[in-house]
Length: 273
View (tube, rainbow, N blue to C red):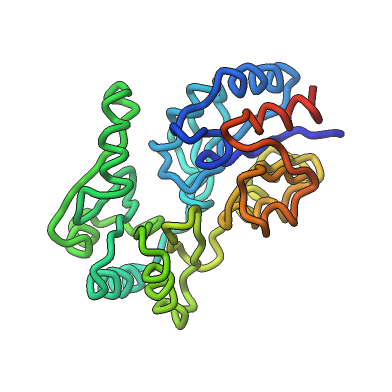
């Protein structure tokens, strides 16, 4: 198997239930990289929320963040690729979400902007305490996200909407069905995410592979959820986590162990070492 690049999702894949990377995963990834294979984080998270995990596994390769809306160099911080939402789309998204009184946050530049300290903003605020200042996610709790978008002057890479009432969450998701200029995906059962139309991990992975000069049959992708489907389809060899969605597993060339059983390490060791 001539794999040159491995793209790995974070939540539900490389990260265990405690949102940590096991030593087994770290050790096996190190051995894979020692063979000259590039290992890339491919996440729905904001760049700063993913970069710390790149540091932990020791990769200096670019990060695919915000479900493919950005590809950014870890070494220089420069964007290799970026797709931002239309400003008027942002205004409409905020209007609908606020009218339906549901939690959401927006990724604006390197900031996570929300009107409530709940769900991800609350979780990140606690995670930030574990890391040095340079590795913390900038969290802004504001009165009005739309006003902040205008004030900051930067378009949004992604909105994340979260609710533990899955039926209500799905009903809100359907309200965006007529907006043809946006892309919607989910990274867990309690959320959905909104990006610019056409944004996906698969598209970004193709761009990055081309950037390195690799064919897609030289790319392995490892994921678990709806927002990983596009990269599973794009990669030459797709690995699904045992804890993943059934659709993801049905697309995979191999289903590995779950994220609490070092499933990433198991697959990498089986096929690349």
